[in-house]
Length: 122
Image (cartoon, rainbow, N blue to C red; front, side, top):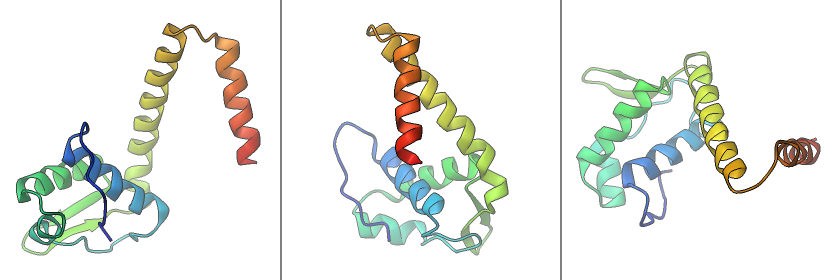
């Protein structure tokens, strides 16, 4: 489930957070499903358990998961995290748009790109 190729340049906890987020959004991890234990993931990926714990803490802060003391971490209901994900996505898009504008693309260029993507997504 948490098979992933760790890549240099991006902190490991961010890569793990992105992968778990992807699994939750895609539905591979279902609402209420128990996540593997911190030590289990750390062993599987040969990373420090503190890295996994940091990832879980961030996912909990974002509302994607919740923890039950002495029981583990579970996937939250979609209602708990969809607003947080939408805000995060909007923030990432805004940053990308700022970068594009600073590199010479125009507002009309960005609108055309968005329209093209929307058309492709159908």
